[in-house]
Image (cartoon, rainbow, N blue to C red):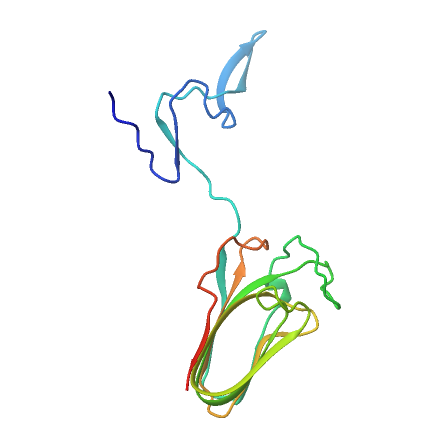
Length: 191
């Protein structure tokens, strides 16, 4: 009995004739004495490898900010830097094209008393609103996914007695909501 074939992830193998007919090949042919290029169905040899294209949206970093100077710090965004998702925005007001724009944020806050606000659709729970948190922690960490809101020109607003904070923001590469998060969604602090 023969061993079964093990196929590497991300590759497809054609082990039969006329596979992958959606990859046409060109071949010259003559018709009534006129030579032309003709698209024909490919006829691969058995077990040729085709790398399959990856589909779907990914996350990419768009903002990486540190604040060690300002007590009041605002992480503003450019709406046109975020691609429209194709999903209708249910908030009022909304962007001119009427579509949601997804982002993922990681925030770290060090050293002391602070007040933080962040805009719209926090983890899909509070659409069209601002969520806030106040505290007196040595360290505060939060990651979340959301949609930007046309009413607010910022993603995060912070007041901190001792300026020392760090933010990373990702956007969707296609506008659609990616099927994964760049980091686990977490929230914790150290007193």
